[in-house]
Length: 120
Image (cartoon, rainbow, N blue to C red):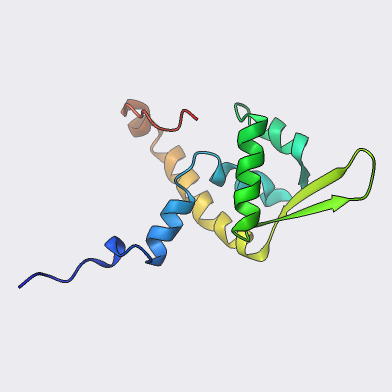
């Protein structure tokens, strides 16, 4: 008789969906950058050394589609676009800060790992 499948192996379980959200390198960093307030695209790019304009645009679109950030376009020439966290986006800051804090506390361990991912 087969055992019941663990909760996290079910495709639609919440923890798995959260992990999928953070599976891309820039998602948590963009959310973290917006934790202090509203930023324009150029400001975000300066906060995130190494992110290409294309990757930033893609990440912002995905976060907006997921309901984690708001995009406000002002009718100016040139167009002014600002990004800010939604209420749901602000809820994601707590686990991001916990992960970042864990990483700082275990810097030596992480430095010894041969991580091959995250080179996007």
